[in-house]
Image (cartoon, rainbow, N blue to C red):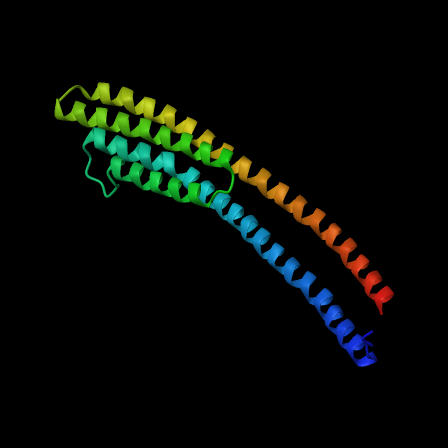
Length: 193
């Protein structure tokens, strides 16, 4: 029978204690880094959508109005604005971790497609020299559609806030579990040593 020396036993326990002390810290750090990144991304999404929501419909409405009235302006072409906002929504969709939130952004993009359809109709009216009143009626439809767009983006913001709240609760629960596990680890180490 092989005899285990005191030095080997102490060396084994020393390595075990270091492993049991360092491994939980590394796992906890990785867990928190991932969760904090997701939480931060959710907050950035809320900020981005709020910024878009505050300016999007006004910019689109104004650019369509200037298109109809033929007033010279520095405002972008409505089509360019719509394409720009669709790209912004695509970026948000890529950074959103929830399938429901991604679908809400798809709905917002379809609403922008409706805006684009109306803009194309207005351009056709202008090219066909139809009365301005026809295009003004379409502008009213665009404004109504943009109200729906604002509501849809607000729904996205609400969803992101709810996701952030869930993530916060999950982090809190995990902290409680990890504290319990750390206490158990200390008890085990005291018993082993």
